[in-house]
Length: 283
Ligand SMILES: Nc1ncnc2c1ncn2[C@@H]1O[C@H](COP(=O)(O)OP(=O)(O)OP(=O)(O)O)[C@@H](O)[C@H]1O
Ligand SMILES: [Mg+2]
Image (cartoon, rainbow, N blue to C red):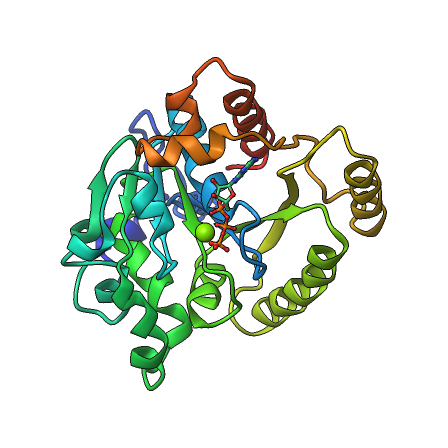
């Protein structure tokens, strides 16, 4: 029930003098909580995990309190911060089925990571009969809404229940693509899933941008593929591009982001540039 003081809160002016009880109600408070961004593409190996980590670290460098959530049973994000998914006792699996809180599965490394373990592969089955199964992640995030400014969710290469949970909990989605014809066809499928999510689960979600990754700028094919992407998804392709470099394979082996592994390198710079672009759309 509404308390007396909240009902009367429109009455006293900031300097303490009484105003009319009929004065207009104060504006509704700004919706609180972090901006939640999912990294999604059902095609495998397009740099979803790499982008989740490096973008989050670039935000953290700018002073944002950033969290990464590993929603992929492969646990690549968890591993890329030097943790072994086989040794993890509580993971996002336990969170999704209501056995653990988010805080219990967040490990503080270079960045905060809510970890995955192989049992996450059984989550879709375990959640199948749960009421509100698409909203399990959204519900779990409420408990940490004051702890972070921005949350990045890494998703598996499929459009199953784990990805649907991520998209239902998110304000935005970033879609990394490798510039090839086949991955562009996959984008249409992803758009259909998003339309379904917008209609039934999360009307607010928007594509923040499509990110060309693993670009080999020397090849004509890559340039043609980008042009095709820009033609087909006008206004939705980020200006930032992520070039192909072996640094992205080397850094996770050391349990680091590329921003830490080679702070002054061009790979780190490309994710800092992307972060600036993304920040422009973060509340
Ligand atoms: N710009 C890049 N240049 C070269 N290699 C890259 C680049 N980005 C990512 N990689 C490497 O490509 C591989 C796939 O990247 P990543 O794991 O981020 O993709 P993913 O979309 O998360 O894959 P999955 O669908 O399996 O989850 C990794 O070995 C990663 O180190
Ligand atoms: Mg991945």
